[in-house]
Length: 265
Image (cartoon, rainbow, N blue to C red; front, side, top):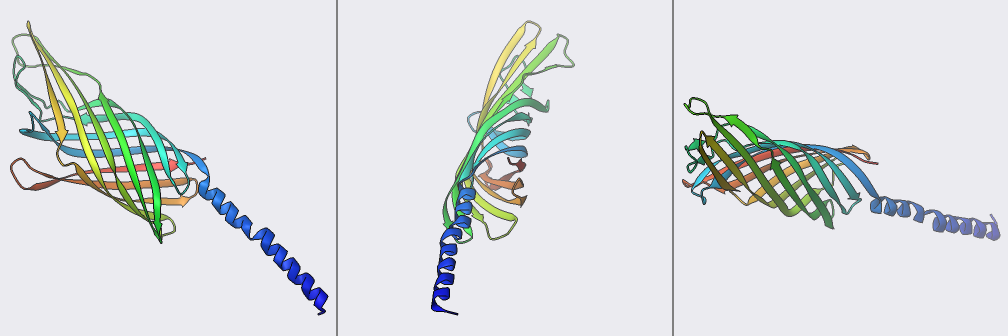
């Protein structure tokens, strides 16, 4: 092979390297910075110990919900989402002592409108680990539940309505070493507060009482995983544990779980 031919071949190889090597990187960069809209359906259940009467009494608030989410995902950087749905909250165990007649509420779940938003940002990558921060705001607006009071000489009725708000925020550690699974761990601020208002009418007697509730235990531990078999579909499942100190002494733990199915365009 002559020197001229060798020089031509080397020149073509060099030109090919210069022209074609950047394209995969550019395509990868474009994929990493591409913004996608991802609708999703999420279901959740949790049970939290709540304190009321200025923290001197406790009972259980259990809630379940299903919401539709709209999520804008900034590839490799995080997401921002809004959601709206419907749920049920059970406030059984609240005791009202200042109505015309005292009442231990045991009427079961009340339907509620659920709305809120969340975001997650990833800003540190260490090999197969990613560190970020996530936050969520949720509000449950309960409808009024009406029911009659049995076994009274006078006609009696009750109307109860409960609302609660939850704020979650904390760091998130993700492991990206698997192909389709991304396990994650989070230790987050997990705060719930709200009110439950009871109105009681018995004949000419009318009374109203409001209970301010606050969930015990401000810190939650979340473990979960994201399963993403394709670029357009993924499932996120997680379990939350919230340890707290009981009024009678000692420690206990509340739990919750959620599953979210996401598609993308």
